[in-house]
Amino acid sequence: MSGSRPLAAAAAEWLDQCAHQRRLSPHTLRAYAASIERFEDFLSRHFGGAVTLVHLEALTAADVRGFLAMRRGEGLASTSVARELSALRTFARFVRGSGLKLEALAGVKSPKLARRVPRPLSAPDAHALLAMTNDGDAPEWERLRDTAVLLLLWGAGLRISEALALSVADLPLGEVLTISGKRGKVRQVPLLPVVREAVDAYRALMPFAVTEGAVFRGRRGGPLDAGHIRAAMRAARPALGLPTSATPHALRHSFATHLLGAGADLRAIQELLGHASLSSTQIYTAVDAAALLDAYRGAHPRA
Image (cartoon, rainbow, N blue to C red; front, side, top):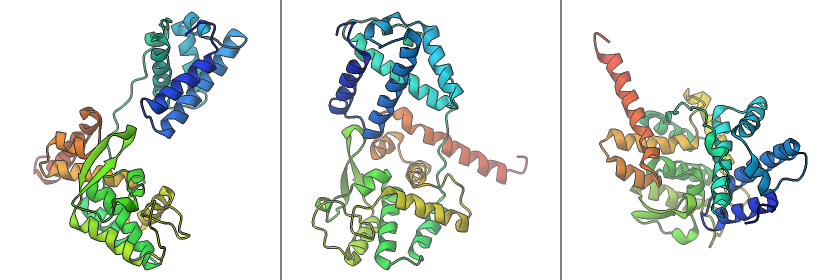
């Protein structure tokens, strides 16, 4: 890779590799592309012209800190700054693979981040949410549909995107469902009878003759949008007294913490959730410990 090559051309090759070899999600690819575009715009003003890979080699740690300071000045939180720096470092590794030296990015420390603990729903709150979904004013098939989707999140630990990607080709559902998750990682997820029955009940009343494509359909027959499920949970929160953290993803958190609380092995939970790293799953031990402390403080006479 020549040092005179435009940064934009190298970035396009990198993004293509991320898409086809690393199989990153479209959301991640858009974020990476936006980070590189912002960095290139900053460098074009810094160097006073079009940016090539030679300019990247000439960068200093102070230059990189200047870019991050600019982003902070635009209102970015530490988590977003860390993501921006991570994207640039990933690109730098790609460029270094061609023999170019980019040491400046390695010399800048990421901001320290507080590890956020997931906020799952309790089992009674999850039950109340499902009951409220069934008692709405929408047509019965729509209520059954929403219940089935929520049960896939809470009862099988699926991401909302994975639940809505369920295909007619996957039917009839058996005791185990094969899920293709992030980066094409395939996992096997056991399905409780109540989950399978909920999907069957929805399908029995759905008014559309769908023979292929997405199982879950919107009111006009097109694939159901995740925004509908998020809106349904937002609408239910005030009546149930649930916090704003009660989102579809919180039901996936609930799946993990309820399993952990019942004694499930952390490695098994990792496999069920499709986490690439055990460290991603270990955050649920903090949730379980927090619940234990709350119980202790509420019950011990000297707490």
